Length: 377
Picture 1 (cartoon, rainbow, N blue to C red):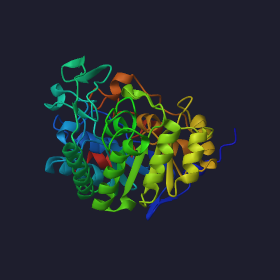
Picture 2: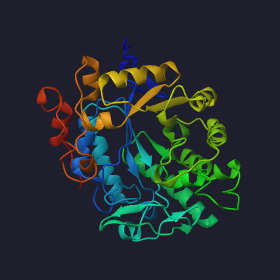
Picture 3: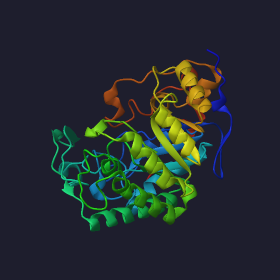
Picture 4: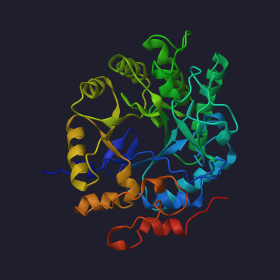
C-alpha cells in the first residue's frame, strides 16, 4: 500500500480552518447525568481527542420526549448548555479545533421508563426489538403518532436546540437524519405510513427533514449546519425500499440551503449512490467509511479512496474512541489501541472511556489540560 496521508493535511469547512481532514464522528457514550447534562468526565474525554480536525460531539436531544437511552446528552435546558460549555472550553484549552453538536431526536427509539414520556413517531409502529432502559432491556412501546402540531413544535425545538448549542460554544450543529431515529423514521417507508403531507411518496417523506434543517439554518445560519444521512442502514428496524430515489431527492431539497456539510454514514466510494450524491451535492461532503479492521493501514486505504472519489473530510468513530491521540498515531505510523469490551462503550465511568493510553503510555497534553480544566457546575 502507498499511503498518501492526504487526510493529515490542513483543510477548510466553509469559513473554518481545520488542522487536518479527520473528523471525530459523533459517538454516544452514555456518560451524561440522568437529566442529560454533560459531566466533567466528558470534558476530559473530548479534550483528550482535541487533535481531530473537527469534533462532532455526540447525539443530544432537542426536547425531553426525544431521549433514547439512559444518560444520553441533551441541549434543551440551561443546565445542558452550561455542561456543554465546559466541554467546549476544555477542548479549546487543549488547543482543539472547531466542534459541532449533533442534534438527535430518538422518535420511537425511546421508552417511558427512561424519559417519563411515551415516545413519538411518524406512525404508531413500535421498535421491533427490546430497548435498554434504567431497569434493563424492556419491550418497546407503541409510539404516539405525531400530529401536525407535534411536528411543528418539534421543528421549533430543533431550532431552539441549535441556538443553545451556539450559546454553549459550538461552531455549529449536525441534524441527525440517520440510524433509525426520528428524522430517519420519517424518511423510511416502513416507519412512515402517514397519509398526509409528511408521508406517502418521497416528496412527502423528506418534508420533515427539510423543514427541520431549514428552521435550524434560519436560527443559526446555514454555514453552521450539517446533516447526517445513512442510506440503506437497517439499524433500529429501518427498511428502505426506495433508497436510490429517496436520497437524491433529499440531497436536491437541501442542496440550495448553503449548509456547512453533508455527512454520509458507511460511505463506499464504489457505490453508485455515493457517486450520485457527490455529483449533486454542492458543498462539503464528509464520508464515514466502513473499515475492514481497526488499523492505521485500513484507515489510510479507505480515507485515500474516499478522498479520491470526491469526499472532502473523513469521519472516524471507533478509531477515535480507542485512540485519544489518533492523529499523531496515524502521522507516525504507530499501532492503534484496540477497542476493548463493547460493554465498556456504554457502561459509564472512566473505564473504557478516558483511560485509553496515548503513545508511550504518557498522558497527552490534551488530557492533562482537561484534568486541571473547567468543571461542570
